[in-house]
Image (tube, rainbow, N blue to C red; front, side, top):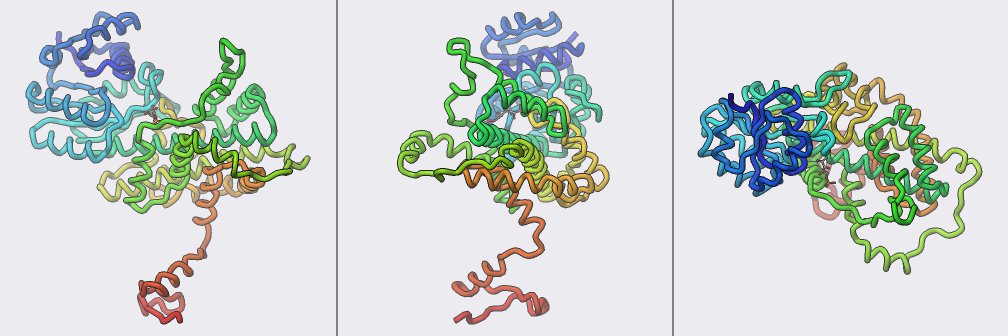
Length: 470
Ligand code: 6PG
């Protein structure tokens, strides 16, 4: 019989997903330009029900109809070139899934073009790295509901599972899936930066070694702060370099890379007018880190505070404060990311369920964390909750953790240790909870120098007015 599912592109993610599909009893056809990759698959234990094809036409011909083909190629031009080659080989009703980190506007365009040709296109966010792809990723498919129905059994079979069910759902039409995956990555950047700030402050502020930090984080990971990224941090901190015996993390150059999804998240947030300062702070932190040579030069002429040290009280409590800061700032980061998804969902009429997003992020993906359970419950209870920070279950927690969060930022500031995401998150919290902000002054300035007009608090019925400020 014919293969039930096709995977095109045998990079690490493509291979892992193909093996995962085969594990679940589906007959799988895979395509790659480099047939050597089929050898890799055999070595990784591919069953006989998985067959490799180096010819695209043979690969397509091996699939039962309607064909279901998952593209696992690099986002951008490679996707368009694959679609161009596939299109003449396909027939009405066939489904192509793009499993890469594609720009959601590209996905919207591709989906509309394919619809016009009678073909289905799904933009599918896949998270969890190699391990997740192999044994259970979190999957965020967007596109026509009908097409989702055709691939649903396969996606549900391979996805991760949590106590709240299988980590895949139909996110919404057109670019919704890739948008949600992009925001997932933006949250990932912020959460990673929060962990970096935590590490830095406890290392330089308290003088903890990598091993001591790992022990402390292992304790935290037993409680409400539990997360995959915290677990990964522990693993990283414990690793010793084979040659020098030193913690390997100390030998890693402090210049962060990025592939673009964090930048897109911030770009979209500016377009939609939705503040995501925690994510933007994390992106800037990576960019600043990359200016290594400049920083090394500047470190010789720009000096931080001298003679500052921690009080006995601070030494005793800093770790507990930072724990609370980490949790609170993470809540704020999720609040911003979900707000951005909500705004895009309204703009593009996607009808995305935030409770469902929290549910499918609970396992498999990089940002999976214990926090996602109360987060899901909050949106189940109140689907129209305007901001996660207002949730009945989370507002009191933020309140309780705010003192430690403030002490964290103030200690770091006093020591001259940058904590951009701890502080940006705190500023977001403090701004959001303020009935009064100083933008009365901003409006007055705009009117004073440019006659941009302003509204009066005492006469709202007057609308926009102008004054002579001289
Ligand atoms: C995932 C990851 C994955 C990825 C990004 C990270 O969900 O599995 O988010 O998509 O690791 O490539 O992006 P940067 O390379 O920009 O850090």
